[in-house]
Length: 358
Image 1 (cartoon, rainbow, N blue to C red):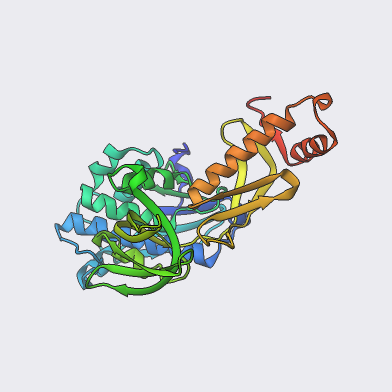
Image 2: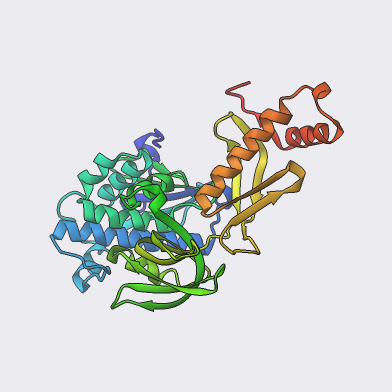
């Protein structure tokens, strides 16, 4: 998503060439959670090293280990945060160092743009396929989890900010998904027991059967495993079933990450041009029986949704709320009983038709 602003509005301290902005939710009060900021800056730094390695023609192994020279030339520098939601000046390398070739932060913004516009060709124009996959995994690690949060990047040469939201994660998931049929891919949740980096395997305890499952992962996701040593974790890959129809082994694991229990925030119904008067926050929990499904509920709205992954859970919440709006909020009172009319009133108390439709 591009937002046009005048070039003169980008005022940066001397020695800085880009501005990173965080807007929405708590950032609108000029503050941001330390965990979110740390993940964002760490991810940007790893992206900077990837871009630097391509510029220098340096090969990168399964794990990113920048050399001392790369750390000197491609380390990001952060200035003092400024007002404007939450804005952070960015520079690269030593303050008096002259960059060779296209400035790194300009190339970073091109990556940002490709992701915001969901443009695979533009992505490949910045990075070769293997590096682009690595870059997408880095983006996936720091993209906003809350639907109201937005990350923007603008540079002196391209002052119109490029904005990333949680929606970019859908594009990333599609690009990183194994190229096999959907029914051959499974996501399971379990307790991380062991990691064998030499064999590229993780072992998890699968709650429904209380059995250990060995998962063989793809080498390019090794960095993400280091960040996922929390429990429970979710593992996505091709599966082998036992005689009872339960997974006994996962291969070509393409994704390993901690289960995200942060609030699921709904601000609008995307298909109906209906918005929440105040954001609806739903806190996911694992179902008690299998510990495989993420669940959210709101008894006042008649909402009770569950799914194996957070993305699918968000889709299910959207579908249920849309159904409730169509079936109850838009229905004439004379067609509803007392309980249904009460639900209709609660729906109207929480949601309204957006101006675009009104």
